[in-house]
Length: 327
Image 1 (cartoon, one colour):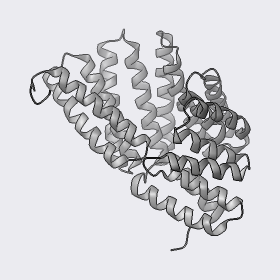
Image 2: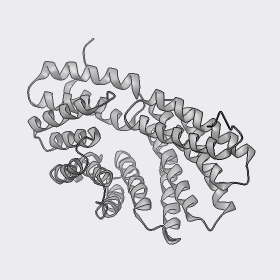
Image 3: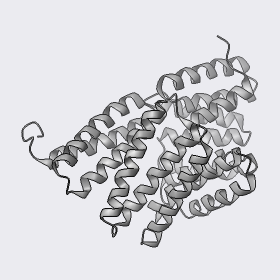
Image 4: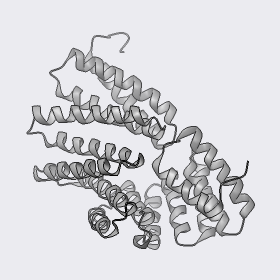
């Protein structure tokens, strides 16, 4: 329809939104190169819409949204310079919307999310001071959005992630006491969020994967993830996370079974599965298989998600336990 009637903005907007959604799905399953292609196409289309209809705030919002998505994808691909540019562009555009339409608190919430994404990039790059400032700015913007009426799960979820990432940053920077305040805030936000499988998954990941090992609660995470898997049985992310929780709880056989099930459910290979599988194989005494699985995990990550932050943490943990694979 866009080809038949190219002058209709609605058709161009609809196609760009579909491409943005597809890019988000593709990066979630680990196909970041395909995600980058779709996000770039969506970005170009939203730029056309903004240039042709600069008075339509919705187009500016959608433009900023795809820029943030593009930044996440580029970060996963280790193109951190371009990711920073994308995040900064999203922040600038959301800031302009906040100034232009101050009575729409959604723009403030979206601005906070973009700042949190930039903070995560700074954290990855070791720019701790910049990361902490970005997170604190994001928390302030989330608070402002809450005071304006957006005190709901759509605010609580990204705010909980922001507190979690800031807590990890502070903990690894040698400030454990300060970090625990933010872990506690993240957990308080997560506790009531149990209506969807994705909310359960996010809470479980806090309990099973926070950098402060003493605060991990793998047994509780197992129960929560079992609920998520029950809600959506075929989701490999939830099954794989359950495998990680079993590993953290020293239940190696159950971990192996869960992760292998997750692999069978994937439509695209994910290094997370292989890292967890390698960890559980090593702990269960299958050292040769652990070595070969670790090598496979590294190859998959380097090919598809070389900058993925969570996979990088698992990679470091696996290398520490098993040792770097031999050539």
